[in-house]
Image (cartoon, rainbow, N blue to C red; front, side, top):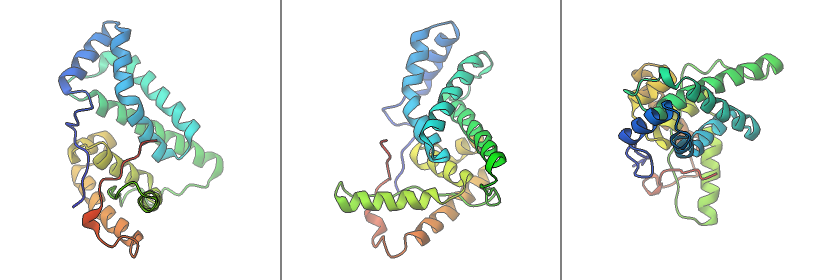
Length: 208
């Protein structure tokens, strides 16, 4: 069975905590803003870096995402999660950056963006073999298109529901589910012969 993180991860801010911090940040509290940044910066960076595959660009995009989020805080509706809104901003900035790259180099192909997706989930212990397995799985993930990687990361790594992923990426929930289904098949095909017992695999977690 493929495991994934959940939106109720105890290490993260609850909806009530987020709402309170947003309210305080709107009122000018730098401490509340700092807590919001600290709570989301690592996860946002991991997400953006997997999309852009460039460390420096990812740092810039994350900084810009936070700047835009806080500059528009008055227009943010607390009916929604701040984290979802932040990832939406980050994803759109990633797409803009990739379009700029394409305009400059002509190297990127967006023809496969409408379909596909990707599923994140595998791992064993902390042995050398496990680390090699993890590297191979991420290599397979990285070969997917940008929307595919984004859907996979939000669903499995961020533990978002299909509806939340759909809202974040601006696509129908049915499309998200289709992406996830196809992603599982693609990942299994890519790792055929390498993974013998899928029931032993744990959620692939990225710490850096």
